[in-house]
Amino acid sequence: MQILAPPAVASRTKFASCLHSKLCIVLVGLAIRLAVVGFLYPDQMDPSRNHWHFAFENGKIADSIVQGHGFGSPLFGNTGPTAWLTPVYPYLIAGVFVIFGTYSTASALVLLSLQSLISALTGLPVFFVARKTFGDRVALFSGWAWALFPLGIYWPAERIWPTWLATLLLTLLFLMTLYFERPVGWGAWIGYGLLWGFTALTEPIVLTVLPVMLGWIGFRLYQQKERWFVPLAVASLTIIVSVSPWFVRNYEVFHRFIPFRDGMGLELRIGNNGDTSYWAGASLGSALAEKIGPWHNDAEWQKYKQIGEIAYMEENKEKAVAFIRANPRWFAVVSVRRFVFIWTHFWSFSHYYLEQEPDDPVNVVFNTLFTLLTLIGLRRSLRINKPVTTLYALVFLFFPVVFYFTHVEVYFRRQIDPMMLVLAVYGVLGFGRLQQTPVPAATPPLSATVPLA
Image 1 (cartoon, rainbow, N blue to C red):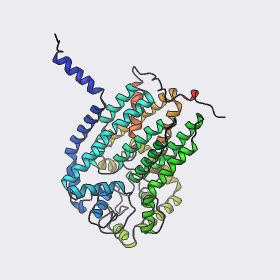
Image 2 (image 1 turned 90 degrees about the horizontal axis):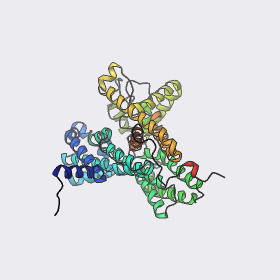
Image 3 (image 1 turned 30 degrees about the vertical axis):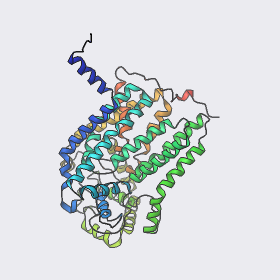
Image 4 (image 1 turned 135 degrees about the vertical axis):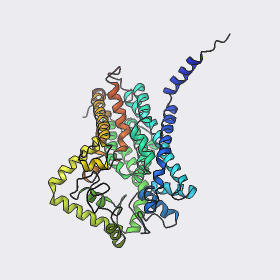
């Protein structure tokens, strides 16, 4: 005779099964993000400035592609070819425009939903990164923490931008790096290089940690007396080959070497011009009457059209460098302020600033707590696995460096949030039952490695 479980017991069993399911983590994360999209997608439909808020420069370049003008015109008119952005996301948006309509409601919903899916799927590498470094329990909590992570929910549903795809790709690269400390096949090294190349053409800022990850792999292989130079050379050559078509295109179009983007001069000037009223420098919420950049200043826009993109970026670079040389102390102080902003979200509590950002006190508390928990997890991790802890620390150290010296935005640094979240979860669990998690056998502690000769 078959004994049926009571409904309550069956429900609890299903719930417990879902809690331990990676598929449930992704689906719950996706459902939450899609719900937020339902509230935020109308923001993309503002028709002012020819739908500027709809993906900004990415949307303009995508529109140019759809109209048959090629990869160009990143602002408000047909200004010809551009190297303002790298190609992956504008072409992705262009593909959506072709199918669902340029600047249409359907395109907005598709793109924001796709970004929500990308963000939800990031929970999978988060889970596996945590499991590789700290075990199953931390992996489960980390996966759910990402599904419910406010910054991972809000931003992909609010802004059409390549950051969210780059976040998934960088987390995958971090996971692969952890596994590559042991010898792997040549196909894996080539795949690693191709993924780096694709990620760089999505958002070049990730390249700040490429030397860190390759160097860490090489050092770990060297410690174990494994072959390291040739595999790293294969990966590096694959990266170069995969990005070179974009370099060639830029040289043929602009007759000069432009590796990825040409906008560093403008980025530098936005944050280095004497204005500290706002974190974005003389842009957006700045107190200056004349904002820097062609987005919000008609005189700047006219100059961009008149002298062309390359000359415009060079002129901004010259102005920024001249200002920094004339004001080294100001530059040093503001660079420190940008460092603080990246890790705490604090810029100012002045009356003017809070009028622009009334929610900042809450954001400062959340981001500061997140950073502190990450540091706690990093410290606890150091006790059980110095090599892996070093990799985490180096990624956190090097990734935001460019932002300290140019300017900051509220969505900067999001690409390393998944790795920070893993450590934050580990730090939180360390206060309770989890004091020290055994290190997975594939990642021996430093004392177990072969010492340097």
